[in-house]
Image (cartoon, rainbow, N blue to C red):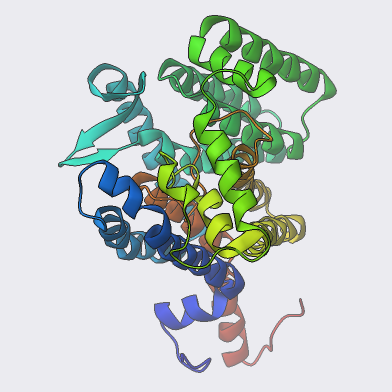
Length: 384
């Protein structure tokens, strides 16, 4: 335990960090690692790999991801902005390269190989995009003559175009929802709400008309006809789990779900540990979102308020999409359950998001330093 009397970067970090946030992120990572034992062996065996191939890879990403989260949480808000700007530029550049040189998986070019590792740049783009847009919105709120909102709209257009080009409709919808929520918080005029809302509806219509795989998924969701094997099997696993599950390792339906370790790990959790356990997972995500929005509500700095709200919305909406697909409440879409599903890029990127949240919700160390200085000089501590 670090004493309050100690001084230094680690002591300041420990006593200024939101430990509820930190515990929540670590808990979700622990749940994900536990579920990897239940969800991934059957997938590995179908691919003629060692039964614990994905478990070992999941474990290999845990410590680096945790280190990234903790390291970023030491940053000041100004350093968060700078880090996000650099990460956004690099991610956008890699997304462009992926369109031309990336690996094609199921008709999409979202992955690029770096140092022997497959990286999905759009995963790292998301938290950086949120932070940079928060800064642009806050600059416009601080000085209306600065065209921050216009720059945020242009940046959204660039990001949206790259996501559609991959194509990745799920990430496009997620990014649009989060960006729209931040813009609304920043005081979006009603005219913009109408224009952007109409554009979003028009975009979905165009995607349905132009992209066959999008039309196929929506048609299967609406009619129940066609290849619905994976979503039907996932729902069977949930139903079989009942309230308290079949027990660890006792799942049967999970063994035939193709993406049980990634997009449908929620169904595996339901079959083996029950609906009550799944409700607990949903409550953990709800707690994370509500605590983040509460921080944002109490925050006086516009940049911090917009950024924290946007980052927790990103995690919350992504988890909602994943759970909705598992429950057949939404059309099937490849979207991982944050910090729980298997995936190196996804885990590290979500830990970047978590690190940004932890950094921006810390009690300001510089304020503590001023108070200590005033106390030592005999002037007393200023009132809150």
